[in-house]
Image (tube, rainbow, N blue to C red; front, side, top):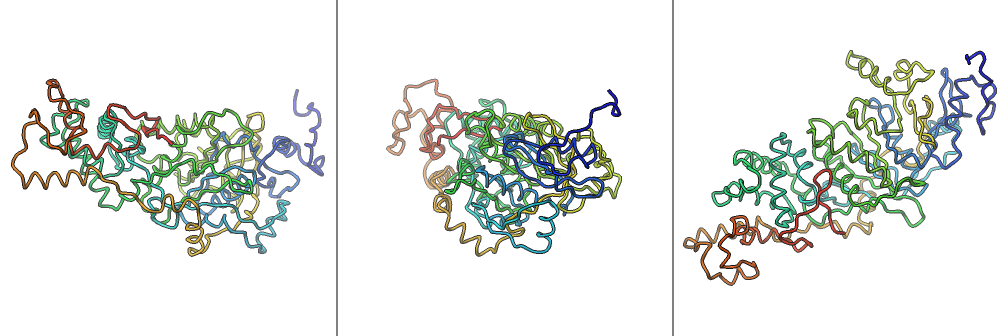
Length: 538
């Protein structure tokens, strides 16, 4: 049947004046006429006009099918995140936002009505009401305004740690062997001092023989890792690792009034450390992945996680790291978590990850250089066929406008729709730092995570041992039948003639401090997930 023979398009329900609309507009409107709960993004743009009768929406159950919010700097990506986060919270869905520039904290306070807000609300037929939303504010290692977020070295794992240490593939594999060695002995690596103590031992005269026992780790590679750790500490990175470790289940909280809590990770104080904070975001997601139960398809997500400045995550990433991201994104949907990557162009996201993102909000792109033009053409190719000239539309969009395609209630892509987006109802800017600090200190979580806990570790034990060795005669041979009182409880048998150097070391004072009373036992290997992050006991 040709277009001339096709029956007249029917107006979608709820679209007034629809018979007068062009046929492509009717088809787009029909594609967004959802019957179930949905988030309202804005009104359709067609032929230079805003059509408030045609509302562009995202079905709430499809938010766990992941998404991408992209666009050049200054096109309104942050306000789009704010708009989506507000509506998710209002429908009882917890949200995580990374605030890289410090301008998202306003979501906790009611917005301020002005001429621009009134004009935008009128154009898209929005009933705008100022509103603040329940928030918790966090800061990595307590650097900045927020409840401190820390991770133990053991739970962070070798793959993510290799990313922040900028190790190559060989060094990453060697670090994995070191973690495996500690895991086999039930050794919890809590902070950087603990890991450095293990690596220092493995590069010492006493520990060199251990290298062969864990897969042939070379002394030279162990030395590189040790130097990387030392440089990492010298840059002030120690506060990010330690205890109390952040429990990522805090991100899934719902406020007393039924609204989802918006967790805002304040990053301005560490925005000059992109490798660190982007990898920490991935740790949060990986920890959620192996802690949350399978729930399958749900009426609404358990959590929606916005990954801002996503290109930083993929820059210089190893194959193992990229594979782990792809697998995490693919599988975490069944646990009710939606992940939105926020970046400038889709080409910032690897193809295997991009293929998992069912919802797209593409703000304007610039085409000033040949590279820009190439990126523009690549972006257009990632969209379904549409009646728009997308190369032209994407360069002509104004601030707060975007090209949208999402998954319908049946899981099929909706028609591409140029959209004038609604205005957020919360404050479009940062709240006062003093008010932010008051909110942080008033949080019931503040007392739980505010003060770092530095329990006795390998670093302190090693320092004491070295001091004793310097002031005492040479120690007796390990095979001596008698043991001093300080070694009681090591569980060593004097007649064990086949004891390996590994077992002797684990029973020594150097490593005793690493065997934390955290539920681990010598001989139990720590279970690790896709990223090599350790599974914790809640």
